[in-house]
Length: 130
Image 1 (cartoon, rainbow, N blue to C red):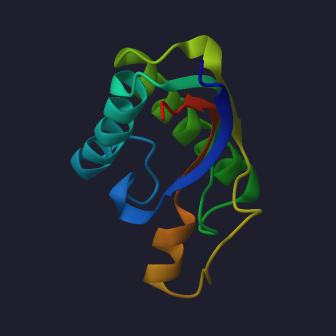
Image 2: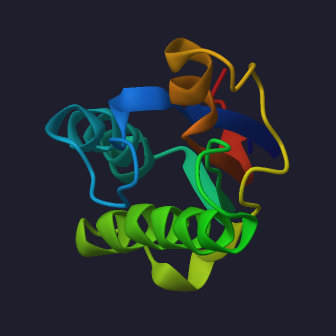
């Protein structure tokens, strides 16, 4: 019988694809992106998810404490959306890191959009029949 292979996939949903400035509400485009991920998780029979780590981020506009809360709210929003669409909440861990882990400069609109993101790390296994 085929043995499961451990997999780890890191995804980043960044910028205006998920959230507008100063918002933890998913955009329609953000919901579409998450729906694609949900379909993969739910309809790939050979995939077994063990853990989904959800990390919210913010750009540097606003006070540190506000950005921390906003990043946590963004992570929760993504987790609730996944859960409402059939992904087991018990598989998820949620955290926010505020503006402490930028991936681009906060000196431009484009950079701030990239920093306004949620990262997902999906850990599990997949069985490949040969």
